[in-house]
Image (cartoon, rainbow over all chains, first blue to last red; front, side, top):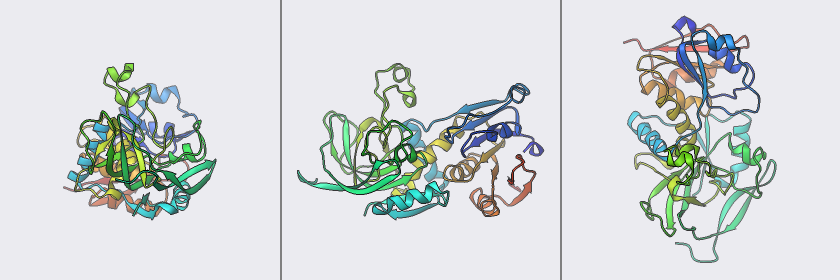
Amino acid sequence: MLALGGAAVVLVTSSSGGRTVSDTVKGLRPGGVAIVLGAGPEPIEVTATDLLSGGRKIEGALTGTPATGEATLRFSVLSGVTPMIETMPLERAPEAYAKMMTGKARFRMVLTMA
Amino acid sequence: MAKAGSTYRAVQVLSPGKLELTEKPLLDPKPGHVRVRLEACGVCHSDSFTVEGAFPIEWPRVPGHEVVGRIDMVGAGVEGWKVGQRVGIGFLGGSCGHCGPCRDGNLATCRNQKITGVHHDGGYAEVMIAKANGLMSVPDDLSSVDAAPLLCAGLTTFGALRNAPAKAGDLVAVLGIGGLGHLGLQYARHMGFEVAAIGRGADKAELAGNLAPITTSTIASAVRPTPCWLWAARQSS
């Protein structure tokens, strides 16, 4: 990432515990920010030096307001962004949940109610 | 509108890890709430808060917070929403309007916010009752099954990128190509950023290239000592 000049932003969408974020911070350009989106029980480890040099930042972001949600939907229509989904009927929810938890969903399981 | 005494199907959590199909009584919405006849609900990793009991939960509880359906009954005092309208319901169940953060305009950090599928029943069901001020309007051009994951996975990545200190042409990296990451990649591309994807597995590397429509890709140096690839996308023109 540094070979590309460093990232302005890294979205950390995976489980963010341990050294995941500290390794990511090293790839930020000066002033860049790692935004943590994936929840996990483990503490995030990062050295002060990695933050001090270049004023790099780590922050978290939690979903958003209904207005931002509507902007998400409108922007998705405008840009043609769609999720990759696998649908299952409601009664197969336990199977859909298990597939998601084991990391086998590509990429979002969606329950349908006929 | 369903008649009194009727029921709807739902999948609820009885105890940690135990999901079961059940019938629940159809109730009218309380003041400030609407009743929604559901069409789709995404399955999010945060549903594990409910299913595995990471939050204090009163079981039984119906999980699910990526919910799309049509309003079939409007409770007293609700303005701006009508029967038949297609709506989305996300993780945040609706702000209170009177706490400090709300009065300061920070609805997402409302101190009295209830979490959908955690504090009250969510979208693994045919019917859900939702607070009106947490609702989102769903555009006609979006199918319910496509809209559902955008209400949490989409909103989280889109919102983070929209508020991020990056300008068009800057490099934005997405770590983890899963439920959130595969959407984050697409949003980053369409917001005009140069996109890098960081993940594991050649199958996902190829997929990342398809999600961010670019013309060349290279596998560059890994940022972690563990088996990992960094895939960098540059637009050729």
